[in-house]
Image (cartoon, rainbow, N blue to C red; front, side, top):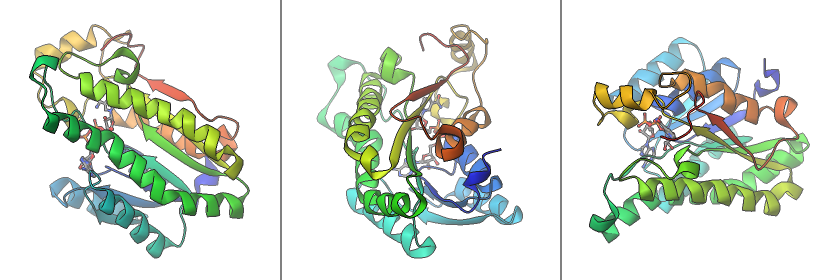
Length: 258
Ligand code: NAD
């Protein structure tokens, strides 16, 4: 499946844990040359590096904190210097940032959430554009940007997650704008919007809270990172999704409201 991903150069931000990690492993198993990233080369990063080495994947790890524009630029530079091109960018790094009600929000909270979920995506994509355009020109319009949005971008997010939900809504909308600007360059932009996926993202929640959330999901359970990964591959594969751009694929087990 998705055989055209073989030999494609794919950079996935925030990919040592959770959803990004599962996507990185799946791209590598599809034969892609994969860039993985996190802000710290911690135990999770070392564990993924060891796994990819054991699977003889073609990959490189880059330690960059993407809340800083300079590190977004340096990530793209390092990947292209190493592999010569960039065919697919997956903007996955992101997170809740803060859980606080409106009346206690401070400037620092705003900056933290926006840097993590928006500056990271905007600046990484901005510095990737020349390389994505070159890839599209060389391969006949098959370059692709996929960002990880969220059900919170449509439904507003859970209590205390207004900044997070708002940042993901903006991300969904940025993609629609970029479709208008760059479709002529042969680049597609799509979003994978997970529902509640059982990752470190929800580490602050008790088993009871997770059960309560599960009861709002038609399938009656949280999703797994591995269940999200194939949607990234589908949207990266020009053979599978070449006429799909500006769309949001919900991967949420029928969840209506988080
Ligand atoms: P996670 O915490 O398991 O993984 C996040 C990854 O991003 C890690 O590899 C971490 O090292 C990396 N990262 C964090 N900050 C970074 C930074 N500043 N620079 C570079 N890398 C950084 O989280 P997850 O649940 O897999 O979330 C991944 C994406 O999915 C996020 O964008 C999140 O908003 C989105 N999402 C998650 C859920 C969910 O329920 N888990 C739902 C909707 C959307």
